[in-house]
Image (cartoon, rainbow, N blue to C red; front, side, top):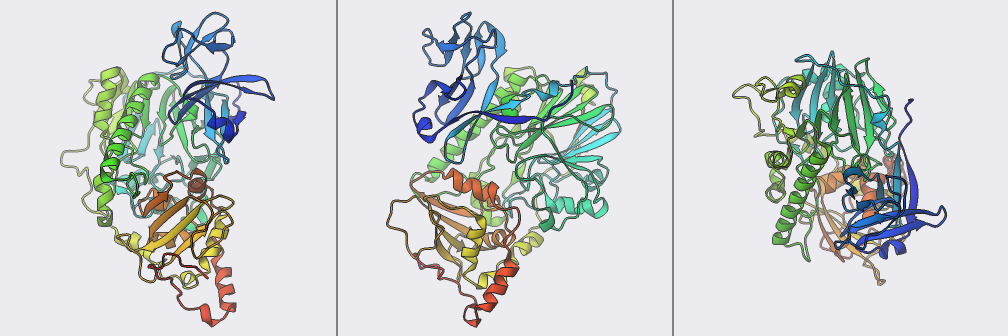
Length: 599
């Protein structure tokens, strides 16, 4: 069977009005133009969907009158029953799982039902597992989401973040990487980078590698926003970046191949990977919220995934209304527990031989982020592994930097003392100091940039950003380290309905958001045309909103959809020069002016 690139097909689109009429529990919906029927199950904000077609012989499902919980449907052909909350058939039990569709919000807050095709691309050209010699496949943990895989005579590295911060200055490495990390990267035959977030695509790390091996082969998925969209601007010289289609085996040698898959929730940016060596599969779902739309290979030899939570500014950076310290603490506790249970259930369902939690080992170590560090509690990998062991016979591995798992030994005898070799006694595991200086100097360099001597930069920047025709007014305030107004900094309103910059909030009904941003980070982001993840995921903002609504389109645009090239500041400065000397001095707007204008 020849490989076909994995694609997504839109099967049904529900308008915002139709979405509003969706009730809790089971909903039967039809695509009027095709006549095809679907089932949508809603539980609070979570939704699951499938075709209204029994997997047995294609019968139509109807409401199950014997179902008291409102979760199951009955096939009209042979009375098979499907629990749509789990997409598993309950009659006959243990028979099938229903093929699930991806449910995604569109730009207008409608819903799309998407089908991945083919759904299980790893089944193309199947290979039976061969015997492995001891030492033939070894997985060494370096730090965070970075693994070094020895696969026969090839070496593959996942997501190398080994030095410097991620998300501007908000995230720092929790673990001390092994002392030979750079040599390991130099020796890699290929590097896989899952997505563009800086805890996976680390330019400071890649700059070190490029110093000796600019032509090292790097592989990324063909995402809507290219993973390396900012390569030119980064100044890192890499000459061998390979963008590969989803769901197609990439042959490395006769024994080794890999396949990159898209995320069902964030297909425009997130990916995961299956690596196969001599028929043995290693699945790395990385940060994917719903990898491959929830369809993944079962009984792989090794599975690894994120586990920790805390990779968002919500709710720690929010204030006002319900956002008391007690509410935040309870929310974080509940969310982390939900994530823990979800990961444990996923592992139980997929039944890998070995599971490893990783990609969560970061810390908010800069002194200015002490509050975030204290409140942003993360899951403990050992707690997750204990939960998995309670409910299944899956082996678990909590990795320490420099620890190596020998796949052959572990599969043959999990009690083999050489199955996992821990780092030598006395090895430093956790970092206790970080070199903040060089990275903060880069950010601080933007503060005094000539661009910001001209208040017209505000209109220039938001016009470049290209987000408008949306009823939202945002107040942007530049601040110091403690989120107090920065002396002489800018404080202004943006009305995204018509992209104007009013002196005061408009009289019409409008949602309002106040965003306070540390001046070094916001100016660095503006100057370089970077995504707002550095501000939001990096904890460099403090937010208030009225009403308390998440503006998905606004944040999605500034976190994912900004233009691929930065604003043309050179042209802007030339224009400012022609306007005459009266504006060529710093024209900061006093931050105590609540309704200030940029003009």
